[in-house]
Length: 277
Image (cartoon, rainbow, N blue to C red):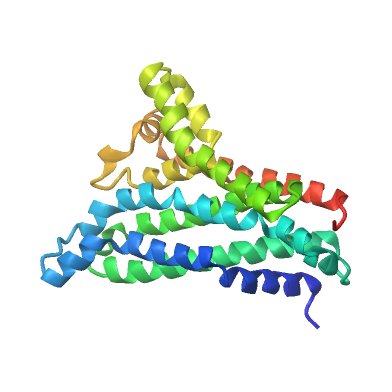
């Protein structure tokens, strides 16, 4: 007989696969990774050999903001939605501990989003990088860090979900957090610090305080030895020059891991103290 943890995980996985958010996400990732110009150039027989290298930095810039959007939109309603419909009370009445229910829902959601990224990214990768595999490693690193970012965003979304009383309120809060992390943070905070105030010494701590920026910088760091090394951006270039590539990657990976663990731990503690209603 399967454990309650696996049963709940499979239920969350199946429910997530039915989400229009997830389907749209997979399709969007496919076309981002493939690139519309690729279709046109390949069809005309004029595809450059270095096309993957030409688009990989653009892919990072475009795809990284989408990962927390889908993760926050889905995870923010994971617990609150079940509580609103009464399903959570039913789940907790089963022979399963609260942590089995909680972690089952978390991992089920993470696996479904990872599958969507693998299908979208992976299929496009086979098409694009079969012509020139030189940049495939950088692409795979970007995929790995995107998976870590989705886990971090789900952890943040679970904090929202356990604190929210209804699905609409939870999803609205999740979208607002995405807007803050991606739009306001990048254009507002970092832009003002770097351009207007010229306080470049604060760029690194401000980057570490945002999992989206950490992921973007990590992905770009792996392009440092490619022909696109000059397009790393101010933060990645500064950290690469000051700390060296290996230490920078270690620090950023550790910080991104903390963005997964800490919010997840906070939401788990809150969930343990709550009732089903």
